[in-house]
Each structure stands twice: as structure tokens, then as C-alpha cells.
Image (cartoon, rainbow, N blue to C red; front, side, top):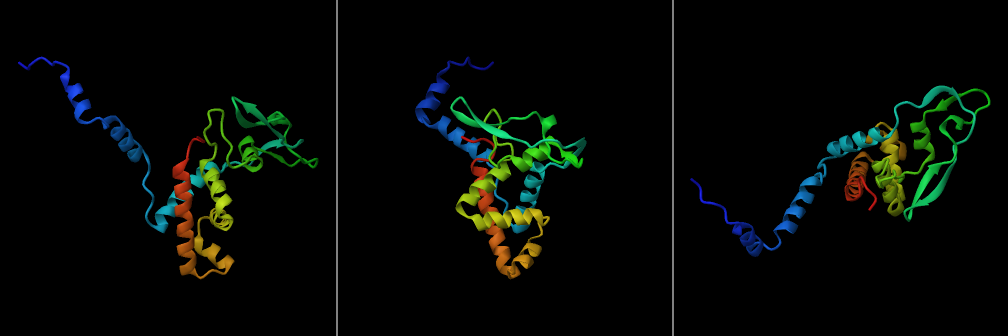
Length: 191
């Protein structure tokens, strides 16, 4: 038969390890943080997966366009939010009868990269990280965007830009590392 517990163990641990709670919380934060990919191939795989998740697959609907999307900024609880002014059915812009954009694609094209939802989470966290990177290094952000548009083939981007492949490989790898750090810093929530 085991001895009854007296309840002093917790007091002992608090006395012997006064910062145990902070240490546990710190360890949990470190475990939650993803590890940075090490190679260019791993960085490209990470970037491809993230970017492709944020780009809508379907561009058009069978409806006809008949108006232009408009946004306005409102303040909710001291935070600025961008909201649609027109209902989705009235958005479009061709008198010739071109197909209307899907609401996801329209929002992707006409909204801004750092758009947040009502809870303060980024709608497109990779695009938001790229936007933050662009404020510090415009050319690096442009190269990363070009990389996504080229199907993640860094050699074709290097050829179009007149870069030597070895030099561009080092450059684009560093660009992806900076983007990863920007993404990992505030990937999901604007706080």
C-alpha cells in the first residue's frame, strides 16, 4: 500500500525550481516553432506549399461581370479593417459578357497582402510575410514573387535576370531564409 500524499511535493518544486513555469512555457514555444528548412530544395518545397495554399485554384464563375469591387476601411475595436462595399453579385466589369471572377480570386487580386480576418489572423500569411520583407528589401521580394510565378524554377528566373546560376542560387536561398524568418516571426496572427 502506498503512503498517502501530503501535498508538499508541489511546494517543494516551486521552492527548488521557481522559474519552472516560465521554462516550460519557453520550451513549448520552441517546440511549436517550426525548424527552418536547411537546403535550397527544402526551402523551395516549403515556399511552394505555402504559396500554392494561398492562391485560389478557380479563377472564374459562369456569371457575367457587371461592376467593380470596392473596399472601404472601417475601425472595429480600435483596429482598422477592410470590408467590401458592394455585394459579391454586383462585382465585375465587362459589358462584353466576360466571366466573373470567383470571390476568392477577386479578393486575392484586389485586396492587400496583409489582410486580416475579424479575429486578427492573416488571410494569406505567406503573402503578408512577403509584403513585410518588401518594405526592407524590395528586390528580394520581387525575386521571390518571380520565383512563384515561374513555377519555383529558380534557374529560369536567373536566366531571365541575367544572373550566373551559382550566384543566384546563393541569393535566392538567402531570400527564402529571410522570408521564412519573417513568416515564422508572425505567421498566423498580427499581434
